[in-house]
Image 1 (tube, one colour):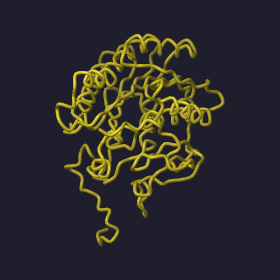
Image 2: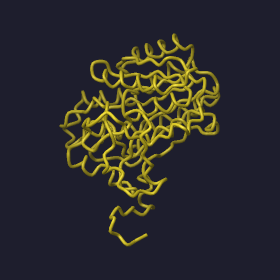
Image 3: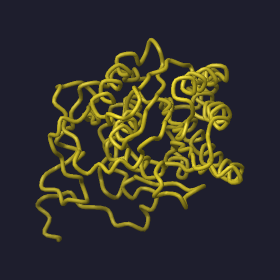
Image 4: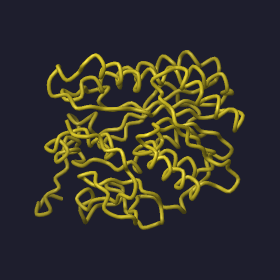
Length: 329
């Protein structure tokens, strides 16, 4: 099994992900705006410091001003993107990471938040924790509340993934690890956080398009994502009287460190199953979380946003033709 990629700093977008010419609004425009490392190469290897991103810093509207946000697994990938977007939009951000594994990533994400946050926002904190266990989750919540006084937005995002080539790969130990990380932690974090969340607060759970479609090579991972979907819907009903909204984001193929757990063949074709015929960068997902966390989503609860390149509805969406020599419009 390939070694999971954990050091995600200083990566830049591969040109193969955004072939030119690309129509704006289809494959987002790329600009050099001194923004953080939110993109990954196809082979997931660090190749440079300057970052190509899809972010225009002049489009910030500070929709999260005054909010305190806690993001689990915020050290890299989608979590890092969420932390960055939240900071740009005015939130005070805390995030968790795995000590001894993601320390470098966490340090760099802190730098990103500090460089991006509004002057009036509180200083960010990175909290090491093993979220598989309830006591660790309580410790995280207690630390955030001790520093900031409350939690306005909880983003349950931490996850692990391992490719499955035979069912024998899914040992009891592995099954417990992936379920504890991917879904137990969502229960634990939520249970402790809601005690400090006022009406108008909200919870956002990261699931996946695989929770709907399944995947033969990610059986246990996809199973946890399906569980997160039902958890999200049930929790939305449970918290409706407390006026706490609960929604989810179900991304399709995204270039994150988890992708490196796949074999070389799967990485080479990663994203090709989506009608848009490409995988997305984490920076293309972060704005979904900003919307759900903001007042603009005040009538949203128990639902999901799907930044997935059309994968969920791929049977109804024609596949894009990336052949530059094609005569079709």
